Length: 266
Image 1 (tube, rainbow, N blue to C red):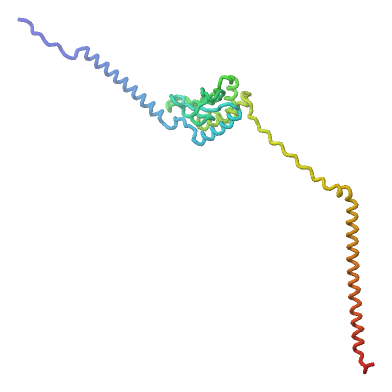
Image 2 (image 1 turned 135 degrees about the vertical axis):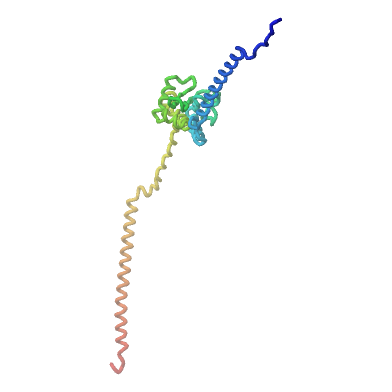
């Protein structure tokens, strides 16, 4: 009799190895997903977000830079970025307006720009917050001049701590200081100060009449004589009136005495 043949058993060594591989890959996937989720949660907080300048700060900065650019012939601007950010910067602007950069701008053959990158590490990191500040410019500005301008920002109070605490305000504040620091570094000529208008000379006094200028002594003497004469005449008139007042009462008294005499009294 032929020996009975048994069917092959299911679930051999190949099946067990495949199950183990799937388990390993599933574990790795869960670990990676957990790390990504933690990174998203830690990176999505408001405390790690680079704050842009306010609308008022941007408008005021554009107005100041426009005046400086018109007087010095140099375009000035700012650029604020997140160290981990990609794509558009957090804020950019210049004397040409908010959102308009000066770098590679055909309207700005000469330009200076303060570039700021803010580094906010995750809460689980041991790194500190940092701000990386650079001053860039067109090719006619030397690296020494750009370095002097960048170092001047901290001297004027815009320090790394200020950039970390309030990036938007600090970036616009640094942009406003660029014209002054560029003049101090000798990279830009100071703005021309308009000369005050020449004052009109005061008119000469009226020379007057030659008669009064040449004969003023005689005229003064004549006026004095007239004044004395008028005074004497006035005194004479007053005395004459007093004399007449004294004579009239005397005459009236004599007339009354004569009238009182009657023929009988006579």
